[in-house]
Length: 176
View 1 (cartoon, helix red, strand yellow):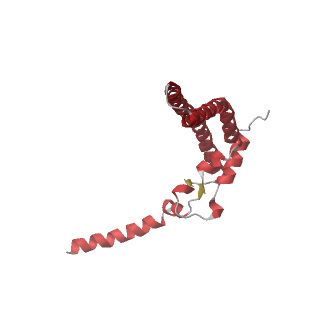
View 2: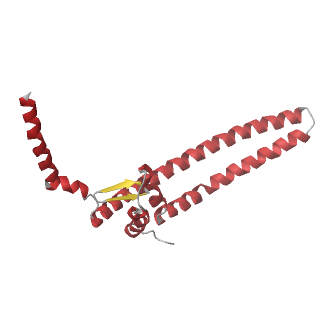
View 3: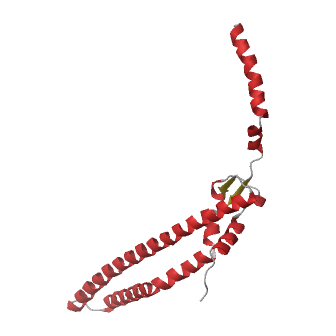
């Protein structure tokens, strides 16, 4: 029994000493900030321009798809007003063909837009991480946490707008 009591008596001073060490106090002085990574990235001038560029790039294909949809509606109206017979069969066949074509083009367009959008966002995310790392270094921060994974943070800790501004400064967009 005495041996156990002696171990506890020796353990308490070691615990107190560890709490008083300089490294233990550094934890209490940790500087933390939060940022909405996605919001900061999407608000950058580069991402705004990339979004407009993607829209312009795919506008002709979107217009073509809209034209196909209009043609399909016209075929459906003709089918409702057309008499039965060979003309109705030809319209149904043409409608089915255009429906398949529209479905294929829509899926292709969606896949292409998503692929290019993801590439742009991945490149931007790499740059935003570098900007946040530099902000952390400049401000002497030990940790930046994404606000979407945080239960509570004081608004004064939010670096989102500052991160967007720093990104825009580091990666200016050429205006035509």
